[in-house]
Image (cartoon, rainbow, N blue to C red; front, side, top):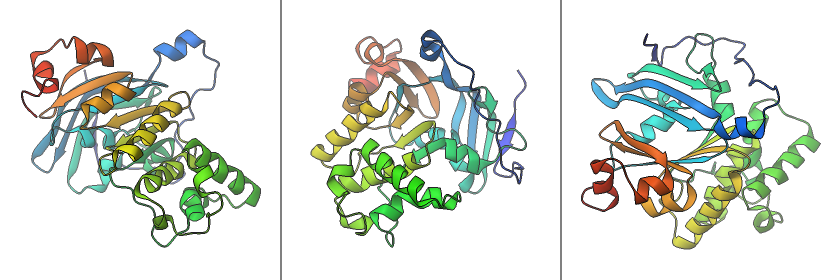
Length: 284
């Protein structure tokens, strides 16, 4: 198979348009079996250090896929490649192919900004913009994309905050600073900000790692509720969390994909000895 070499210097078009997602009707069976991403022979380097080694994986649409594994195994690097966020790191080199609904995300002319609009991301540490209000935090992406219609902005503001299960808690405080709410609310605010531009996929990199158990439970409930509307990929160190929220789980170790399958099967009947050793606490 020919290897497609990609790097942070990949040329992009000024018009920035990726081919739109096909809009032909799909049957329920086709939706169940469809893949959002088809990753083929993916390898990633930071300078001379190889972080991901020849990974191939299909990520299903409208499902929650968890990525587990010990620190430094390449989990975050992998999902950052799904929306080209890795290109913000100097001296990053990628080989292989990532297809998103059949489109090559790294083809010449593909605009990273458009990719990131379709594939949103929530980071490990909640990061509301400190000088912006709750309202401004949610709407910043829309305004950067040129949306000025006040009615559209108001509708998207409420819709996004409701989807993030935050509207009832902040609807009377929208002008207050985004940093004035609790840590768990800030993370849901960041989820609302990601949802406001209406992505097709939501990537979540350790979204609960800095939260207390109550806030974590709210985020997990939210993730399950969003399953019917978005394809979700979540990186987590918490294996109990992966077993609670995900439909499928991938186990990474030292940059390699060791096992990928239905979550219940992987945790209860792992096929690989390394997977069993990790989930039973023998290492990691």
